[in-house]
Length: 226
Image 1: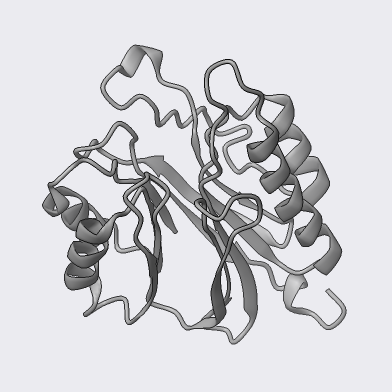
Image 2: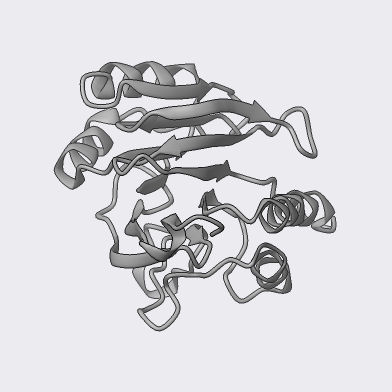
């Protein structure tokens, strides 16, 4: 899987498309996608990624998902704010199992405002994952650092694991300041998965760096009752 914040004002899709083709993920989540970005990504990825969802917005909260694998009951949701969509979909793996995938980009707190909206959205997703007990992956730009109370609670509520833990920091923002970066873009998962390689990818014309990880659904997770 690959997650990237394209930066809505950027107008160079070529670097990202080349990165996607070189990395060759099965699933790509892009946030801050407006009409221009959705059109360019759709044109550039349609041959390899026949399954897709795009919700273009000019407000910085557009979101798009492109998948080589079949999407099952895909849809957009507005959990807290009608101007901030998120994605929930099933993803049918090559083994036939279906996992849940959540694409998120919650609104950050504005100056002098609290973080209630962001916190609420993340906790709602976490509670849903806990309730369903299905294999699930959450990816996107959380607009929050990994060690914050909000992200920690989100992981605890959802029973989610951070694959970065014990492997490195994988800092993605701000892209133009290597010595001052911190993590904002993530791929979290339930304990049903084993983790392969992970890496922060080279810079594109964005203030975020793309992030990719390989997850493998374990045999135990595919057994009846799990």
